[in-house]
Length: 453
Ligand SMILES: Cc1ncc(COP(=O)(O)O)c(C=O)c1O
Image: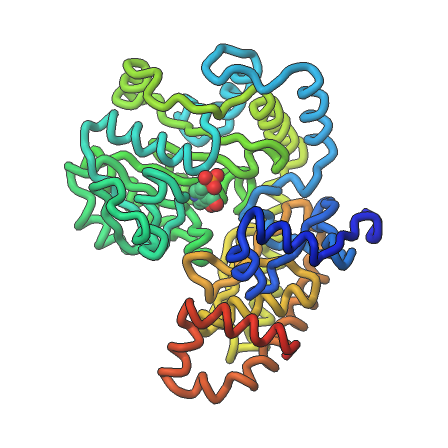
């Protein structure tokens, strides 16, 4: 990556983006200094196209780049494969689909041996919910508050943030929400008329909440008692992100249905899959209605790339690397928490899925800006803006982790300078409310950025 090769004229690009895609999106991104043009990408970093600066990608498109950005082995597979064949016909039989399904079934937990190929994470969530309703003959789906499962159809209905749902109501009926981690609520709500419970083993957008292993085991037990299906959304957590190949492995709990996407194809070609247990109601339903969820997922290109991603992750035992560097990173951030206790409430995570929770919502958005000043691209959680998510490419080295920690330290010092200015407001409940009010956050941060405060 040579800096000046990729420089762009920022103004004209921004203008075109605003005219043809969305001005509102630029405004939204700008508040957190996330209005950055991605240029060349390699391993843990990308070049910012306007300034030519090298940025750490601490976001990884919410966990898409587990094999590292621009992984040459995966790119080579894609190019070679594209020369040989196009994406293929979705519903046809092909060797690429079979190879991938066999590999995925082999590495999936327990007896999750059956695969449905789909096009995206949200598509997979929709397919999983339809499968659960179809196989059980029951309607109600239990999801978690703050959950994130996507923005269309069934996946939006399962989304745990009312803000995303309200604009489009009425949505799909028969969705109920409980608090993540609350086993009493789960026991109350999961009764023999519930089709399925869906959750992320680590809530990503919800603010990096790691499900307690005992909680997952009790949830499994309750589902078994009531004949309810357990669905794990491993779209962010799968493919080595949390220090195991699947996050469910930490608890030993085998779900009935699991959805994988994002890093499934190394971040170079979209692909996703639903994997389910070889048990009667599920297999019978799929065999009886093989066309219940036709999708343009499972293209030959996507499947071939995904097969090589699995090979790569196993050959390099990437989950071990994620566990080691994740421990180093979390320990370093906990030291920073001691140092900056008035600002940071908590550091939590598993493997390289890590969050810093600040004391107030507005701090997450400000912190994105402070980190960008240190050339770190990191996003605050969509469903919990007070939490900064760190989902580095799993290629990150120990030296890079240490460098990131010193940069994060510098960013927190900048945040504290901002806070001196905002202190008068933070002293009063109404001031804090105003700062945390979504519609105030963006103009406030734009103001701070404009005047370079
Ligand atoms: C946990 C989780 N579930 C579902 C989705 C939806 O996936 P997609 O955007 O591919 O539809 C995402 C995407 O960010 C996700 O992170």
